[in-house]
Length: 188
Image (cartoon, rainbow, N blue to C red):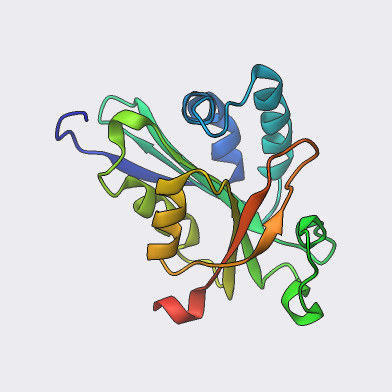
């Protein structure tokens, strides 16, 4: 674990996230190269191809954690799901139509949340999570998590997320847990 340096959490909109893409890449590449993800250069290229279009979503919200010297240590980002989202179609078993209903305001889709290993266990992930949800009036947050990422699963559950199903989030992906958090139920 690194020393007690102060870690700043910087909320970013889509334009600022696009400008800080290199910092997002540093964190992503390091974290998702680890097991159970073992993402390759091709995986990263695909992720950041999507990242560029995601940052153009008008509801995009991101957060970047960094040291006082600017070293990136964590990232989080996502956006509200629109009426034509394919997220619900990835589930291996259907959910009720009322759960699937999206209108561009109802559900915040948390696309990524990651903290580099030397800075884990210091509450940074929770601060990043809260920063991307701060001021968003969505009713709920939705995410996919690899079930073998025990620390991430435990964190999400301790924050109030509940599993609603399983999904293959992209072609060739491992099976992921799909978790949902009611934002009105958690004091927001």
